[in-house]
Image 1 (cartoon, rainbow, N blue to C red):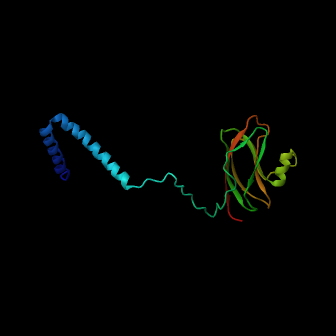
Image 2: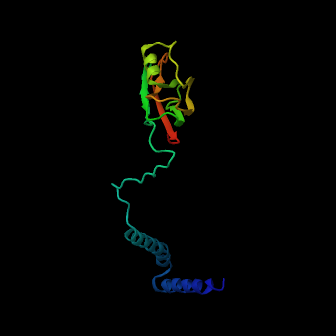
Image 3: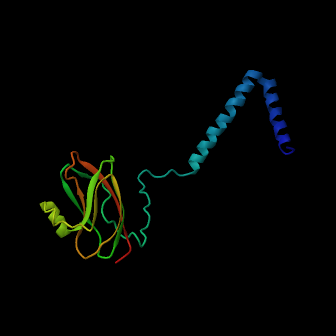
Length: 180
């Protein structure tokens, strides 16, 4: 308190000096506008001193870690029409684990599978009795995935809208876990 008292008395003295010189009305106006003008000037000085970020600057992307060396597949969202089967190639190898989730953008139920090329072709041909995916589920809005790729081959995420009245948009967020 003892340190702020001289500053406060100085401020009051300056205010009374202005009152004696121009009157109360103008003194109050100066007391209100003065700090505002000083605040604007200080803002301009700071703006000039700090460089603005470039509009064309590309954002920094995180450096990939050992667990995420490559993207398993695009995030999408993938549009699949009613009654359609869509196959999305997966960038995976035998023994690698795929982890993540699938979700329908509007919260509609859908079917999905992870299958090798042979089984993907069987599904597309309509040979449902012979179709054996390594993973999959049906009639839900979102799914978690944590699956190890069991053998060498070309692998696909299959989005199946069989018996669906409307098309769906499915977002995929898969990451590879471990190196093979």
